[in-house]
Image 1 (cartoon, rainbow, N blue to C red):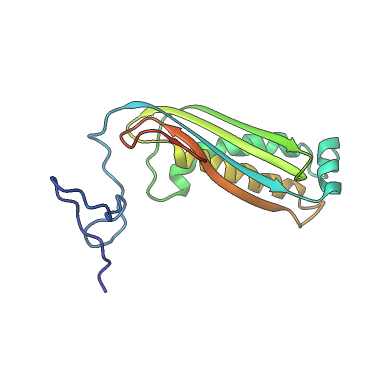
Image 2 (cartoon, rainbow, N blue to C red; image 1 turned 90 degrees about the vertical axis):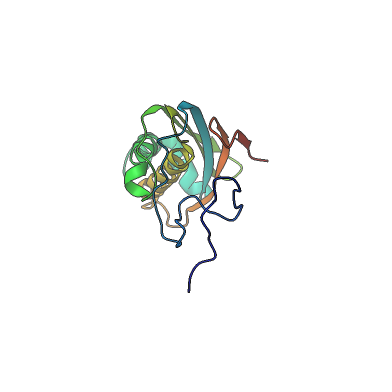
Length: 172
């Protein structure tokens, strides 16, 4: 069965066309060679929820594996740098800034993770920011799982992006 995707014509863009699929519905890497190099930024967020006792031990620096938050922050930075090796159709990009913050939230209890990624390139860095948050959250889980397996990674999403042909985006 042939997928219901059709190739965009030069004069009449099809709103149903997905850029990572060819006319036959096969995955392909998008050609960005004709796109303009612009400054691009993306911010992603997520949270890691846990029981109070686990949160308190991490906050006190009493986790069996050591520096939970520092390790998770560095893992998030590394994750952003490795995105094109993890996500099959992502372009490798020169990343000019990667900032990962892991903020305690007493009300969860747990941690909120924010990642900001910047580049000057032909395509955006949304996937790099989302990967940074995801890898930081997974690492936080790995570092704290000896304390509790009941840790939830939640609400990973794109908060904003700037630059590029599709314009700016800001989550509600």
